[in-house]
Length: 233
Ligand code: CTP
Ligand code: MG
Image (cartoon, rainbow, N blue to C red):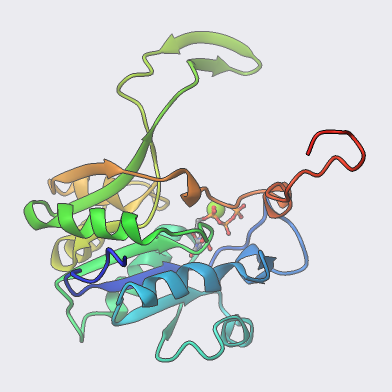
């Protein structure tokens, strides 16, 4: 059964304008192959399948050729040039949607390729009564505060959450919040931008599959482990 059948209409922005410095490699990670396809193509396909319209992908300056190759055959997708920081890239994506002025927008990292439709459905459902909705997971490890290489204290784990994307917003609210943001030029995420402007952000269950591809080893660590001849089948 497809649980996205009854989804309300929504626009989507996929930010893919980073340099992928921690992952290294010849290409920025969003254009490198992951499970047989360019990383960015995975979540763009998932969002299109869920009905995202319009959908814009924010890409690096001079990245058009790579983006066209990565997204070949996927139909109508707007390509927008990004900025120095993720926040600037999101802002450019939001500004590009002003003419279509959607009611709801999902903002997603290209670096999170495995996007289940169930998360999209939860986010859009939660947007009914809130200006923003974000997927979070609990923290299972204990938390230490570090000062250099030494432990400087501990923090309570219970109120902590790991925050993922996509993040869902009322379009007008997140656009205004980005336009009025006076904090650091690289805000951690869009929910912080909305919260700083007084918008209510509700937390919904995230999904471990939404893990962010950050390091070179993230491209290989999902390989199944076979122990040939070990006797364990
Ligand atoms: N991103 C972006 N514009 C930027 C920086 C980041 O669109 N100026 C996007 C990335 O392409 C990625 C997402 O934001 O999809 C999350 O960022 P991150 O995982 O940090 O990717 P990079 O910034 O590319 O990687 P790094 O920090 O290792 O250089
Ligand atoms: Mg980065």
